[in-house]
Image (cartoon, rainbow, N blue to C red; front, side):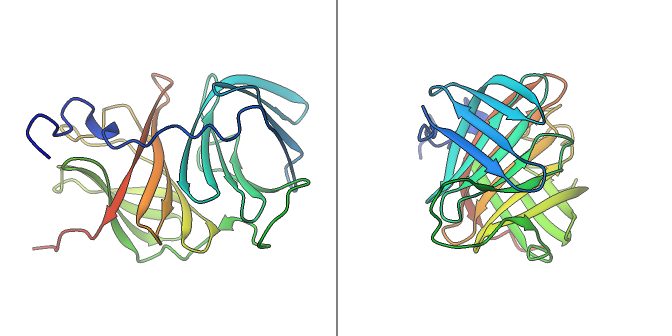
Length: 232
């Protein structure tokens, strides 16, 4: 990588993969506790979410983190999150408070496995650095099933404790949501406090987004994982 392409122009979005358009024109009905929920993808940009007797029409953005695993963001006044797993014909869905998820099955879909997503303690004591751009990173050290320490590049001097939602989608694939602002002079823009990452630990790749509730703005991220630098 030369000096004309060092991530300064695009910031943390530099390595973002192409949008996932696979659901365009399709309808998914999700059932289970908290369901039914229907997601109708009208085209490559807009969907309708029908849940609890209400319908929400909004734009959406989708990224693919692993084979058959789709991360979808939508919403108008606040951010909604869905992870659709084709392998197990299942979904993790956040329609309410940040960090709150329901776990559902896709009606009428064939599944190679029978696993249903759910909250997990498997990430406790893990430590990884996710890199979305040149010399920019989010470093996560999971200290409990619902807590982590997060470091925003380049502020290695200012790690921050945060609550975390850790969800196992399937073996090697985890969804993490962390709600925490970054310190001043870090690479993550100020005011972006909801961090959602779909992490593929088998291939060490991730897709995700950072969201500002104040600006109602989402920035998509993707990139690769690396070992954290040794502590001095």
